Length: 153
View 1 (spheres, rainbow, N blue to C red):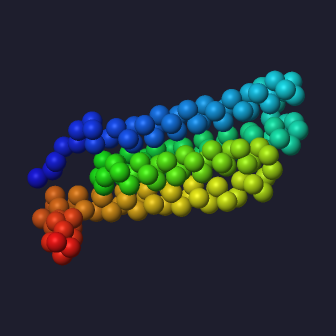
View 2 (cartoon, rainbow, N blue to C red):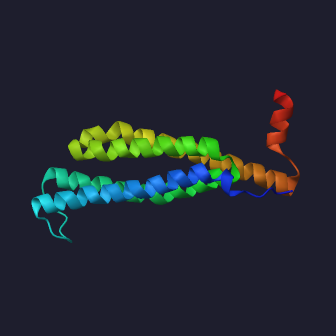
View 3 (tube, rainbow, N blue to C red):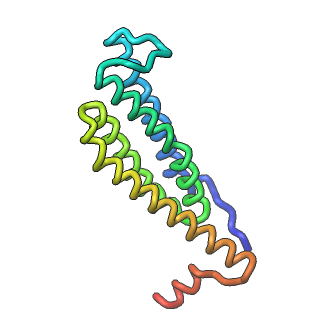
């Protein structure tokens, strides 16, 4: 039998999702500030190196935003919000360091980029594991979580 989620089961993931929206807005603001500073009118995408790095940081964050949101919510719905929210916080932390570092110097983006990739991988594993467990439980009558609990306790 399928259990239903309650809002309390998703509240921390909701906080992460809203934080992600603010972070994307912050990246766009960084680009806007540099546009004003250097008098670069849209749609021009050329300018000083710090402007170009800010644009690239913003674009990279946008490119990863859809996969992040998909695995964030899938992991929360099919696995559990606690590890999902923790990995989501790691992702947001890494992305904030990525944006700041990239604007300062291109090489500073690398370590936080890989940390954000690891967080995405973790969320993907939770999503896939949760989905497999639900499919097995609902369609094959096998509950991996219950089996694990029996072995542990």
